[in-house]
Image 1 (cartoon, rainbow over the protein chains, first blue to last red):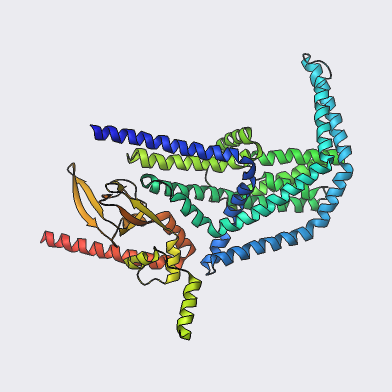
Image 2 (image 1 turned 135 degrees about the vertical axis):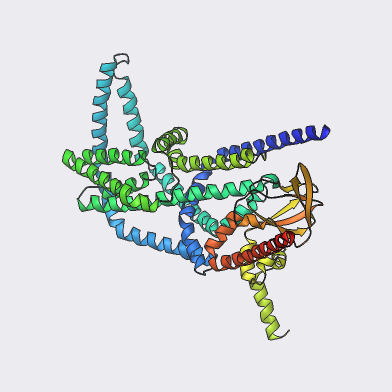
Amino acid sequence: MERSEFHKSSEAFEIVTIGCVLFGILLVLYLIRGLLTPFIIAFIITFFLSPAVDYMEREGLDRTLAVVLLVLLTLIILFILWKLTWSMIQTEITSFQKNAPFYISKIRDSLEHAMKLLEKKMGIVPEGTMQKAMQQKIGDLISSAGNLGFLFKTVRDFTVTLVLTQVIVFFLLKDGRRIRKALIAYVPNKYFETFLNLIHEIDKQISNYIRGQLTSAFFVGVLAIATLYFFGINYAIFIGAVAGIANIVPYIGPLLVLTFGGLLVLIDTGSTITMLKAVGILAFVKLLDSIAISPLAVGRRVHVHPLMVIVVISVGGLLHGMWGMLLSVPLYCSMRVSLRILYRGFVEYGNW
Amino acid sequence: MTKRNRLKTLLKKIRGKEGNIIPVLRTVPIFEGLTFRDLRKIELIVHERTFMPDEVVFYERQPGTGMYFVKKGLIRLTKTTNGERVKIAELGEGEFFGEMSLLEEYPRSAQATAVVKTEALGIFRPDLLDLIKRHPRLGSKILMRLSKRLANRLRKTTEMKVKEAE
């Protein structure tokens, strides 16, 4: 009798301990959330680059040498790209700087007009309240954008993040397996095999998803830039790059880009035809991605129902903004596969 | 010290110490004859686990993920027959068990329990598949040895069954 009671209480103690450890990890992650950005970016880059390192290793190259070569190669490619596109980027920045006040005043005028209409239709809000709030917001935006200290801080933070990310990527690519092995050494024997399986399945799900999405985003970005530039649309690089990045977020990202790109072109040129041309190009590139690029690049990706993807991304965006939208689908897939493994291990085999 | 010895010492220094896992791996039949470089790659996917007396390594019917080598200590394999737990074998230093789970996820056919404080090395299927993908040549060597061992076991079982039938 004592034995079974002892077992029950020790199991309860185990569950409470695991719960406390998980809660502790989450708490620490929450407290250092400000420092997590370079780590998250580094993890994403590592997932994307690791097949290349694995390939070089398979061909007989030492892993450290393979990682060094890959990092060098990436830096060289980035440098060449920078050199090739810098003059175009500079032209876009100069043009944007010159036209920014005009764009802002145009946006302000249209928003003011919309607010006036809204206030009139609603009738409850005192006239001018919404307009004032909006003017305040736009004023803040202009002053912060023109603030030299703010710009300097942004550039400094970006450089620090970039350097830190590179260092983390190097060590994750080189010693990722050792780090993982050292971490899972702390898992109790009872859960070790289940945990190991879980880690591998989650790794497979996340890496397939990230690789697929990044490859697809890269092609969408390059295609959009080339096509917009070919058709003489202003800010081709900027809009194309945003289209590529936004393509990482399924369904919602491309829709946002269509709206954003169309609005920017409309404000810039004032021509509805040019705006329609830009929207048409972006829609065509997305269509091409859905027909030809995604099935190849994201072919092995985990299958989730489109409706579920939209729900998951919306919840992610609601909880954690941009990062939430980007990471919600792989997190959802990881949770799904974890529950499947845990269910099979603990419920089907009765091994809790 | 002769030139040759000096060269040997230098090479040993370059390739690093063997540690405490590689000597154990050398004694395992499925890793027999593998080079130091190969064993270093396998060492990366080996997990060291310590089991206390009476601690269960894995339960019967639990989905199996990998095999274990006894580095130090004693493991008892038992099976439930007609509601009773029957001892099948006791495995000591250098012996291994659970190798079938390396090839396929299948419920464990027996329960493994540590008799005394036991140190074991575990290799698990996801890691092995990953190793095979990265180092196909080494992977095929391991799989060949594993297949030979399983073929031997199958041959013995068949012979036993034939004898029983006679």
